[in-house]
Image (cartoon, rainbow, N blue to C red; front, side, top):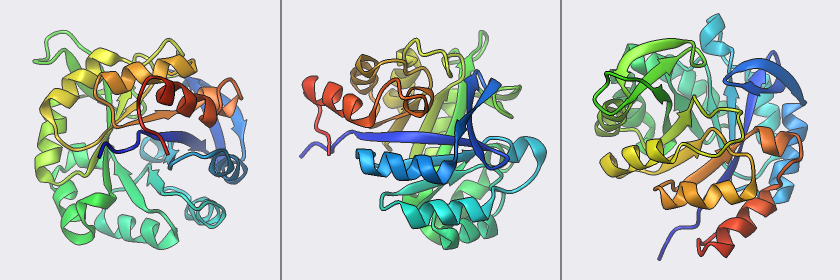
Length: 253
């Protein structure tokens, strides 16, 4: 049986508010995270992803209170990322109500963190968030970035995805930094390149601007599709995306 394609709204949170910009710049306020989470749950979202986009950059942990309040309001899996540096951080987030944890910067600095989290909690709770952008001179043509795409991590994106999978990552949240917030469509080449090399689920992120942008991402190899801007500002609803996927022949919940 083919698994249903998951549709996942993403809440990028900065100082307690959901924000959205283009390529992580020029951030606009998009609302209260708890209210938005409640709305997406009611609309039929399969999961929610909550990313504290300033946590790694500013060196502070994700706000536990917001995670807890969000978890109390929704009845779908909640993935939380931003500022997760240790197994203890993961434990705190899971206790606050998160179902899965996304790691990015800390795993790049210390890859064994991936194995430590997977060994303690199981790889089903661990999402590796990869912020990838095009880069000439890398083996795959894509490099890993950190700090909201502001810095190069000096890693080939595809090689990093493979290594993290071997260490125990359960899913890859693949953020196309060049496409982020542009609404021009997903980076299909990037999705395909990662899909070719890893067997774990891949969540496509970055660039969605219309309901018809989602089926090509699944064609390219995504198991789930994630978006923020178009959902937050009402341009496209969760149901529109599911209808588009279903019309393209993909099973949805």
